[in-house]
Image 1 (spheres, rainbow, N blue to C red):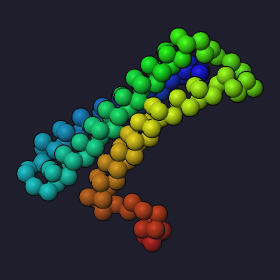
Image 2 (cartoon, rainbow, N blue to C red):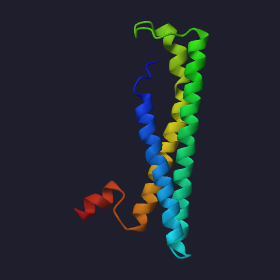
Image 3 (cartoon, rainbow, N blue to C red):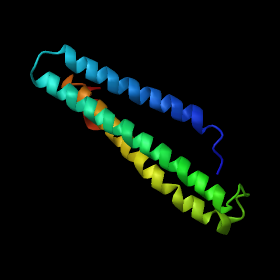
Length: 129
């Protein structure tokens, strides 16, 4: 239940996600109507889903952390496993949102790289080398 460095990390992550989403929407508006614009709008939508999932995960984690402290779970040493079982299990709930956001963000980046014909799989990178 140590959350001391979580705020700077979360702020940087949200800055990255909001910036990438905004960049993709602005990029889509500059292209003429066609396949490139549709692909860029789709990438922007995926980035927006990643941003929202990260925000939901962060808020859910804060709520769970507050409720656990209110219920009497305090910061205890690691050798007292039975007292940390409930917080550990509840930590997986916001993590699912963050993992979903991670995959959506990198799926969006993969779509961008695919449009530029940049190798995106390890096999294609090995073949080009």
